[in-house]
Image 1 (tube, helix red, strand yellow):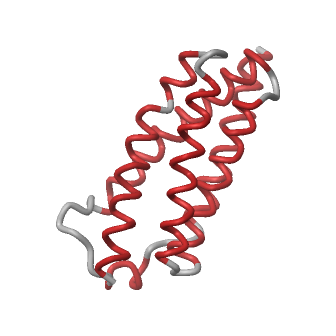
Image 2 (cartoon, one colour):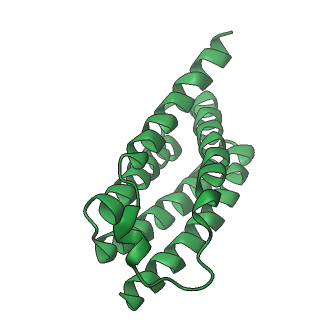
Length: 149
């Protein structure tokens, strides 16, 4: 039972960041921007982020169970903060260049977590692979939107 409760704490932390991100909806401003043809449809983001947030929570929880607070968990916290900050920069502040900087830092933080988590929990490191792939795609999309606008 304790394991389940501690997992719920990690899930709640990640859900809080996800909820924070929804405060800054793309809206008409984003719809009016020039975007590449390979921009995913809006309906896809919710399901993708739901799955990714569960994986992020599980990875953080696995690392915490394996080593407690250490380098990997600190990297996990940093990436989580950057994740929420990107939504504010892109859709709240409407600063595409700042969002590009944040997503680049997020990409590095995800990679750092994966490297630091691997010796502690290989599963935690592997759980971040889809997240890193999605953020790589999002960074390229962010860059292209910045270039077009």
